[in-house]
Length: 487
Image (cartoon, one colour):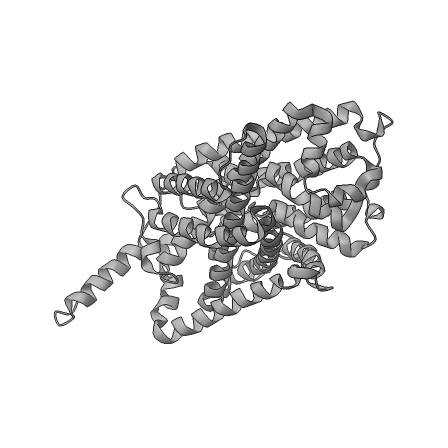
């Protein structure tokens, strides 16, 4: 339809800007399935997860912290089936947001996108705060160099923001180096423990960590809580889906990349956690759960001061790696929400290099606002304890909803198969429900009791924003599903 000559210049300018944003694109055909695997792997931060999460898993599940990882693995494989099936039909930088938008419609998609964005914001913010804390402490203990943690966090955020604005290839090269160094170091320590016989003095290894009987006094409830941190250790595994607009042949390569990491990563967690439990000593599992840094304790025992330094550096590198990966994925969700006009249109504009430069800047500012003030109040290390629990809730709900969404989407679009699109995603949702239930009931102790309500408050705020948008800008919800560029 031609533009009316009576419409105002301002209106014509707004329409042009709207068209520009809705047609914004990223660098097409610039990535392969290996980049999908790498971003998903870096997003989980394998070495960082071992360093940050095992203590909490030991507190809740005792020896059965390894069993908690075993329980999570089937759910992850089933979840990958759901993501792989979605990736054949929906190619968007929004990742899980796009899948649920296409399935449930604009209203639900609006709120889901809001909560999914919140998950990445919290994940990246906590990661950068903890990175600053670890690096500050290491520099002080090893070299006597006193640098405030928040300054190191700001520098890391500035570098990552610049890399994200420059382009995905530059960011991915950095992630590749960070992931490779950290994973190989932790894996080498685990293999060393296995070959030296662990703390049992060479008398062999026990199967107790692999069964529920090794749980603490909390029993299955403790295993469920440990599974929450087990899922948190895999949080980010879906980040590869946010590269769908930039991957060659996304219908094939996104699926291939996701399956690769889903098979390798859980096996890494099970093997390393099993080795570390034996390295610490089965008889000392209570102390393991109370040790603020069991990985460092084991590294010092087996490799001495030099080895401890190597492991700490590997953990710091991994923390930076998963923080960067969460930043990359979160930036793409911000970009997609801006392109949909759920967020300000400025966030959805791509640069001349076809990168989400504006969204990158916004993500950097968000990480500063969320991570540093809380770190100054409770300390950068405690940020992960609180934010990590909250992130676990965010992702558990997101994963459950996405698995159910595949059932609905496949039936509506006419490619439904009872096992692949019905039974498997249904089982995945059921498995994820258990750790979510264990996280919420009985009510967690102390400050943790507040965090589920923080999640509820964030969802309600998203609902409120959606209702305001429906009233004041109803065209936004129509546009969310009408822009074929992003599918």
